[in-house]
Image 1 (tube, rainbow, N blue to C red):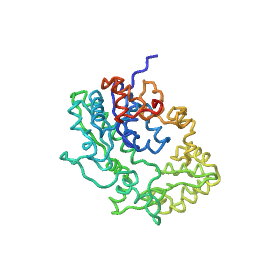
Image 2: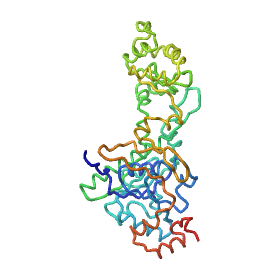
Image 3: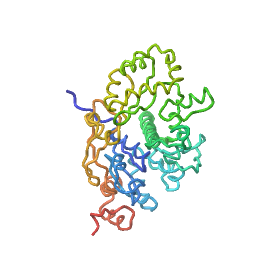
Image 4: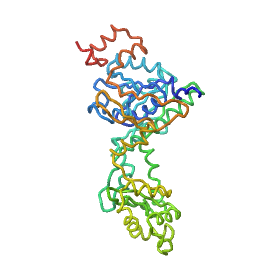
Amino acid sequence: MTEPRDLPLAGITVLDLGQIYQGPYCSFLLANSGARVIKVEPLDGETLRSRGASLPFAMLNSNKESVAIDLKHPEGLEAFRCLVAKADVVVVNYAPGVPERLGIGFEQLREVNPRLIYAHGAGFGVRQPDGSLLDTAIPAMDITVQAHMGVMSLTGDEDQPPLKAGPAFIDFLGGTHLYGAVTTALFERERTGVGRSVEAAMADATFFTLASALGQWQTTGSTLRTGNRHAALAIAPYNVYRCADGHVALIAVTNRHWRSVLDVIGRPDLLDDERLQGNTGRSANMADVDAVVEAWTSQLPKSDAAARLQAAHIPAAAVRTVEEVVSDPLSHQRRALEWIDHPELGRVPLPRSPIRWHGSALPTLHPSPILGQDNRAVLAEFAGYDDSRLDRLEAVGVIRKLASETP
């Protein structure tokens, strides 16, 4: 058997100034692709950490080191520039203009390291096409981007107020695209030797999620709020159906799927029903179709209903709770999830990167770091600071002094 290959980003060093979800998820993906990620935070921690120990912070910051530096202090900025000189990537998701005001914008840092990849994630973009900084007053949080990009106008039922999607998917779309931008820029740098600035806007990434609604808008000039039904009300059955202990989601995309549904639920008599021929007919009689399906699902546990439908190659799934998801045997078997003893949270399920590198061993999951735990080691390595200088920087509040070091 051949020896496992190194992960593809082994040898790449990333400085992660990300906060909350977007930036940290990008750097999480980089870390789990083999990069060394050093999380650079303010002395009181980035926004998500400052809220207290939490599973969201733990899951996004596995396999990272931590330094805590006051970048507003001249010596803190100097220390950071020493890190930049030996790094490959800087990841930020501050509002446009903030890095420049702190002295850590791309133009300022490329003077230190012309090979630097500078990745800036933002809600609505960072720069205009002419290169000038974008000026937007819209706060870029998940709910505001959902509102701004039309997502909330499409979610929920027609007679209800606009509704946000429950999961914070906007931030993770942004983080995923930023990861793609970083890896593409690293590939280019291998050929040219020159770094560049890249950006990914959460709003731009979100536009593509409107595909079904855009199809409806393009053909009719309007959109619908259809709850759990198809965005254009053009497919039936397509809904969430009541079961004995919950619900099951089902979509019959093709006539073949519909025939299979009728076979599974024991209603072959409907095969020749003229009203239900093709999606056009079934959509025109959607309430009747839903009633037929739910008459069957309501008699079964959700897992049983889903299993029978899946066995017939019908797109269906039980609507699972978060508790069921984190305990899913297949996810743990594949090591997509892993129970970890976290020093602050106890035993928690931590996810790995969704990306798998075949031929390389899965990296060990290391719990998210204590704030500033690697200050001294990293600054000694990258900046050549000795103990006396590190002691002084701690004493004057340029870098965080760990609680265990307090006399």
